[in-house]
Length: 208
Length: 190
Image (cartoon, helix red, strand yellow):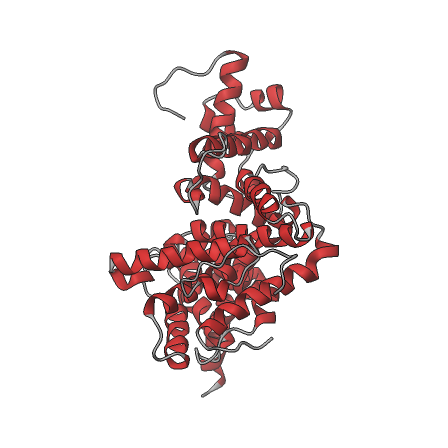
């Protein structure tokens, strides 16, 4: 909680404080590790209010997740359908970590976690590949999003190694990764993308 | 070596193995020293006999033991991790993903597994472009780490049924990783 601030009062303030607290805590630990008491403490409200307003901690966590997803969608331009940068989740490590914790704990599905990146990528890919089998497009987008999320989540693992400390080498590698992401989304050959080729979009009806 | 020398060494290894196993299922921050001892089938006191603290045991398991597990899968870094192991071996990659998630890698920038993969590329494709080699290593590592964390949840989120589409998802994933390896002239075992 924000030390020294006034304690949240009334329905709207208490709810808001609890949801904001959930959004903060979800980026730092697995959802099953966040107790109702911890949420109340972080929000600066009485524990009883978690149940009073939400019926239990899971509903608060769900709202917290939605908050992270909405904030990200608004910031990244997803919400307004403007241009979205590749690896756009990199600016929101808290949301990526929250997704990772929730996915690993198996609670993401129970929580019906919103996943705006994935929804947007799927819409774009389906529109770009009208002749392709929709199941195939879904598989490609699912794997492309695994790559996108891993790029963002595991940046501390790969980035210090990449480029041997040379910035131009690092950014050249990054450009290749962007091409790989594109080729995964479009169902193209990532082996060509990683060599720096930008294949044109496959047309299923066209001869091979 | 006399028996009384062997026994303590194997208890220590049992603790490290048990720690890796527990961390393949959940993040390091959720694992306690007592749980590791119980999983290893050794007395809790041994945690403090071999390590300064439970935290030290977990750190030791993350840093050295985990790297050794992956190096074993790569035959000491002489060949790529076989494809089937990369998707089914939750023990190793679930562990690697959890460790990476909780930032155990923040330290020194040493990445022996990635170095080994880069050497594979340099041997198989000696005239190749370093940017291509590095990007290939990074792309493969990200796909391998990302798989155990995100694939099930993502598949459901795009409206796929894991029972029905699981085989097709794995097939496309294999094709992707195989194609990345091929670009550096390395053929990968199934």
